Image 1 (spheres, rainbow, N blue to C red):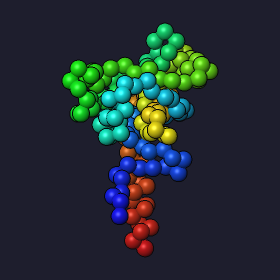
Image 2 (image 1 turned 180 degrees about the vertical axis):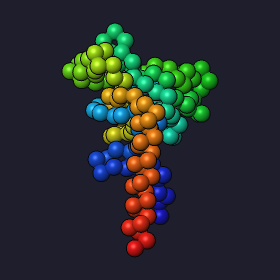
Image 3 (image 1 turned 90 degrees about the vertical axis):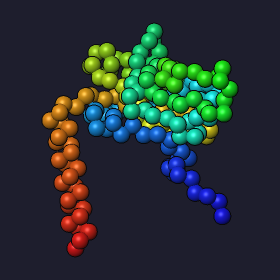
Length: 161
């Protein structure tokens, strides 16, 4: 019998590689977009090995294009030494022009932030889900933690019945 993969697979054929839990804690996420990534060959192999961390990542606009900044994709272990690149190098995001202009407008005019929430493989291609987000204040964070604890207590009470 084949070994089960530890990666999650959605019904749509998405294989989730990495989630950014910190984004859900630090931001109020509003609208999300799916974007492709421009990668090198060794980077896609690292992604398939789950060597990705999106926790410090953010999206930045440069010259009318969107770039994924500070997302860590570890160098592929079996690649040659000369092929290694900076693990936190900027990576270009591939979106439709209309989506890019919408995101740039939100970032510039409404002072929102674009953060990566999920990195996944779909039909062999690496894609990242980015969300337009507003930063949470400390009292917002405390409020969401209190809500989560209350929900947990309710679930425990229902379970014990």
